Length: 161
Image (cartoon, rainbow, N blue to C red; front, side, top):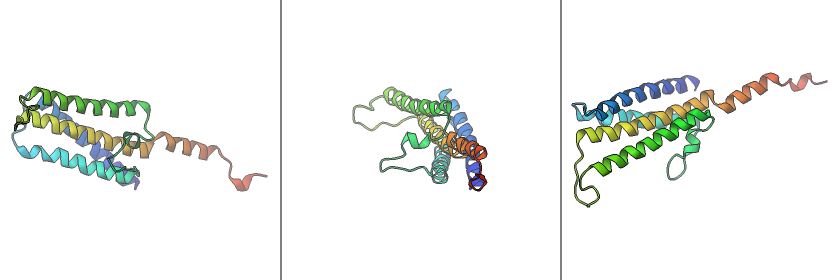
């Protein structure tokens, strides 16, 4: 299990960097030429997220994955990173919605390719970050360090006289 967790931890890091590059290109006004780039980062992020949830033992509820399950056993700075990316995703979606003409007038609106890549890459970055945090918390989390340090300081029960 540790190898699988480490593998998906590395997949989350590489996927995050890949999505970040696409996101920065979309912010600068350059969209990738192929529309399959919509699916590739988002599909990889979804697979990594589901695998990380399974490997970390996160408990999902009926309406999705609660944030406290994602950041369980993570240091404070990593928890703040998750909150930052979630807020950034909400702001990007709001920015694109307010920028698109007619989106609040109940008519059909087509977003530009750049706006689509901007939204999908922000979703992908958030999912990859969540995957990383779940696996990081399971592999190197605060509870795991407390357990290993308390195990080394305790005397075995058979040695008590």
